[in-house]
Length: 249
Image (cartoon, rainbow, N blue to C red; front, side, top):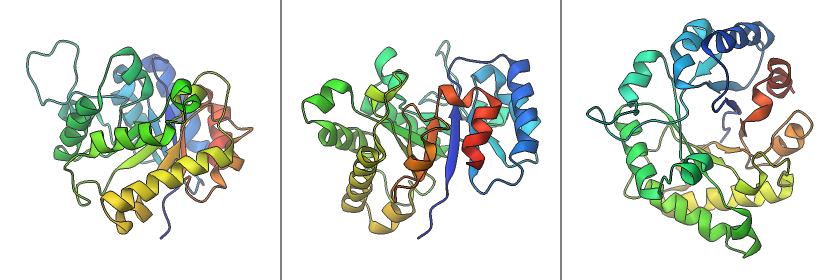
């Protein structure tokens, strides 16, 4: 089964509204002939304007996070319905920075994923191990625990629009990169785990992205691996020329 190739930019807490719009408007003509899916997750404040700028193009705008509840007295939170209303077409859940800085647990991420499914907004579920986990030989165990926690009691049908992103925490923002072979091992294990706990059909069509210091210099070798279906890119997605190179590589 042929899986879609996805190149996604996660801007984190970068770019004002005007900067985001300028980027999107500059990107669209550059990637018009791209054969992959192009995703960008700007800050919440720039979603609506970025989505408006990208309307009618092959660039999809999404969100970096969302609440697990629909509405209520939750100061500082934003719901899936609000995101969709602003033009978001997908949401990133469980990013390592959310887990580390905001203490998001597997259970919390599970509830967010359930809400995304309920509101029909496709999710990119991030999982990854720390340098300490890897040193202790716990990589597979940690990844499986995160998968099981986030996907608990969900069905293959409910996960039909899911994308998984493997982000080795030790390779994020450090300049370190898992070799293509190391990344492939993790992706193959993730796909096998989905086969064992859901179905081979779901596992074979599920896109699994790699995220960890991806840049123009290494993206081609990473994407040559059979179980790597794209990239979730941080810092290198902030420059339009760099991002264009990775989309068109």
